[in-house]
Length: 244
Ligand SMILES: O=C(O)c1cc(C(=O)O)c2c(n1)C(=O)C(=O)c1cc(C(=O)O)[nH]c1-2
Image (cartoon, rainbow, N blue to C red; front, side, top):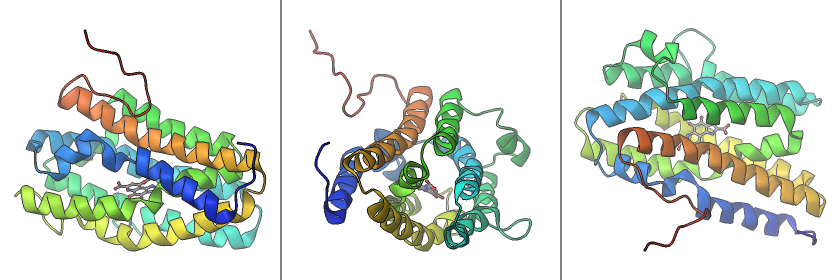
């Protein structure tokens, strides 16, 4: 990219990444939301996603540690509180464990990570490494998938409640809070990125950061699909072999 985009053009490019690459497009999510997974396959999803939930505050702590302005830290630290809570039993991780409990998974087994797919671990760890190693601008940009999460969360909660008798509003309560937290977080990150990506190179970097993060989310679902549904699945943008 050689021309400087206006902040509005940059936002449009970022939104376009979501339209093409967000994990709402993944076949595993379509099965999950349409009620086409078995109880065991939903268990596998919740068990693996626990690791993503658990590492989000680790990722946000790494970003916080790199922020030199108190006004930025004051905003960003809320993300850690949202997931960890102020007390034992509160916050997003605890709410996720309510879901895994309700699916008959023992807490100790879930938190031990013994049943995790290796690709889940690699993908989530790559996200944490990314925010440590890349610029602060890219680290903040990588959280921008949250611009798209309210849509998929609405679809997921409605679809799962309609299609599975083993989930309820209470066991899916994790997602209720995300419907207000995610837009708040995404608005802040988007404003930051629009203000701070001031050269064509930086704009390219933030677009790449968002693509990277879409990949982090996507490959977690690939891993679930290959392990628990079926092999043979296309990856958006990747080589497609010609049949015959
Ligand atoms: O349910 C979802 O599809 C979904 C997606 C995402 C996302 O787009 O990264 C997040 C979450 N949920 C979520 O619950 C969450 O706490 C979260 C934090 C972040 C982040 O990158 O900082 N993404 C997401």
